[in-house]
Image (spheres, rainbow, N blue to C red):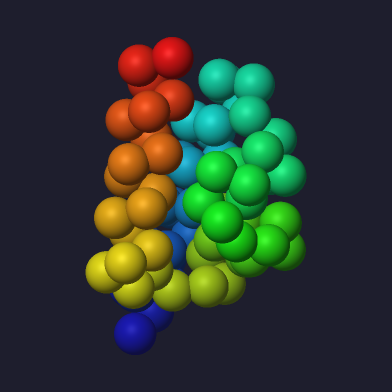
Length: 68
C-alpha cells in the first residue's frame, strides 16, 4: 500500500513538472481534461488515484502538449 502512495506522489510530481515546463496552469490542465482545478491539484499531490479513464485522458493531454 505504501508503494502505491509513493508511486502516486511521484507520478503527480512528474505531471506537475511536465505541464509547468510547458506553461500550463492547473486551471488550463483542468479545462483540457474536463475536470475541476482542485482535482488536478489532488492528482499532482498523489491524493487522487488514477483510474483507467483518467490515465487515458492524462496521456492524451500529455501527447497533445508535447506536440504543441
